[in-house]
Length: 147
Image 1 (cartoon, rainbow, N blue to C red):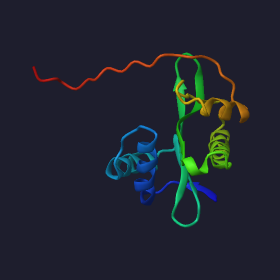
Image 2: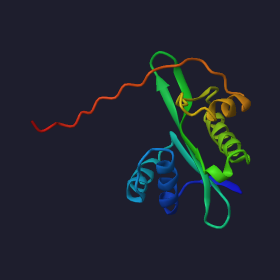
Image 3: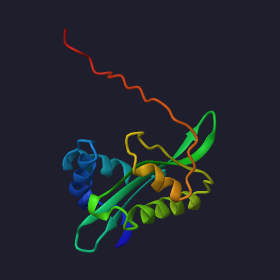
């Protein structure tokens, strides 16, 4: 397995993994998003490549500047295939993201994990991440509705 930057060629497999975890995405959706994100200096998207054109997982991280707390890196997506769980794939992807963040002078990296993803919490803690808070996420559609 090797960790490498994602390419547009990876879009179908990234979409499949995202959909498996409940984030319905098509290859076209992911291809469009990758095309926009890959060239940005404040974003890093990597895949764990098994070498036979099979992606075992992916990670997306971004550099963020928050008014109240300053700069940090935030992992905004990390998905590993069920078959690759507990095989070191997630840890390798985290290390790549941490290395990317450190190379940009960031000394803090954060990740949010849904409270329903019980297996993820001990994984992050085993990688040295410390739980800081629990929060609710609220969404509101801004699309006009027909009445």
